[in-house]
Every structure is written in C-alpha cells, then in structure tokens.
Image 1 (tube, one colour):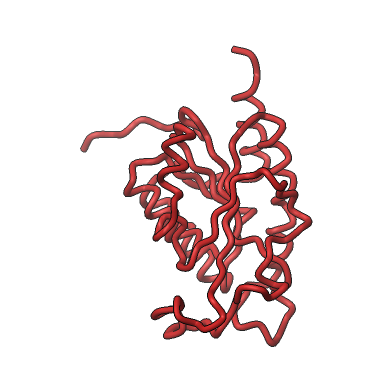
Image 2: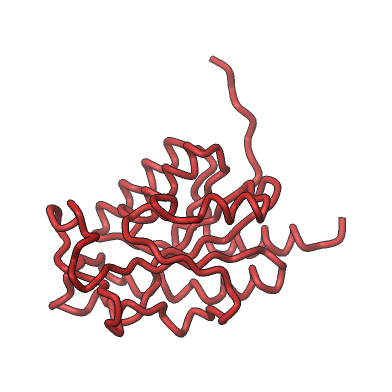
Length: 206
C-alpha cells in the first residue's frame, strides 16, 4: 500500500470558513427548532480569537449564513429530518452573531442548504482567492460543517476542521462527524491553538 505524505496544517493559500455562527440560537433554548449538543456556545466562543488571528495574518475569511425564505419554499427535504422550521430571513436569530467580529467589507455568502458549496458562489470566490486549504469553524459539526468538508474534499481542497471550534447536534454526532472527516483526510482535525500558530507561521517572513 502506498503511504501518502503527512500534510502540513496549511498547504498553500489558506482560507478561514466561518459556518453559520448566528445569533439567537442557543443550546440552552428548549424551544429551539434545531438540536444542540451540551456546551455548544463554549465551542463557538473560540471563534473570535481565530477570526482575529486570521485577520492579523492576512488570511482571507468567508462568513456563511444559513437563511430560509419566510414562505418556506427553499427548505426542500430539510424538514424531513430532526430539524423544525428555523433561521428564517428577518428573524433576529438568523443574523450573524455580532460578537464574532464580522466587518462590513468581509466576504459574506448566504446559503439555503447545508453545504457552503451547494447553490452558492463559493467556488468562484475560492478560485479568486487562489485557495488551497480551507479551515472550517462553526456549526453543526455533523451537518453544515461535515457536508462542506465533504464537498471541499471532492473539489480537491485540503480541508481542516477546528475540532474545539465546531459543535454538533449532539456529542455523539459531533464525534462521529469529526471521525468521518478524518477518514477522508487524515490530517483534517486540528485545534484552535494549532490553527492560530499556523496562521502566525504563514505570516512570518520566510
């Protein structure tokens, strides 16, 4: 069996992908239409430090927002699963969490489905950014993060998931999704501290 080389955390040009860190959704909200694992917000609270480090090190950042039309026309089969009606346009909880540090001129893409690639201009933007490595943070680990990772893999990007800055619908689903992503790219899983260090290394004079 051919042994593939160990990859660096960042290969070539990195892009930080911030997936669906939106306001008003909380793991402590018993009335939420979306299930959340315990301590979900603790994982999201690490996002601002990663975003700040990316900005300081000139790493491009792309923010994603899941949002659905109020007439529900674009939910498709999404409501056939565990989730109820959620993230409708105009609802306060649909907006990007203001505490994570998105700026008015940041790259921002609204999506209707789980994967950041599906039905969006993401691939065009990545080509313009000359991206090689996509670093994923946000939620849910087992839904939007996982499906975006799979599409990134199938588009031949190096894909990394920051395991302490993503959170899932349950602890079991979170761990299973991380394992599934590691199956596709064995160097996929990393931590907040490792990513920030890699950003700083990439920005250091060679």
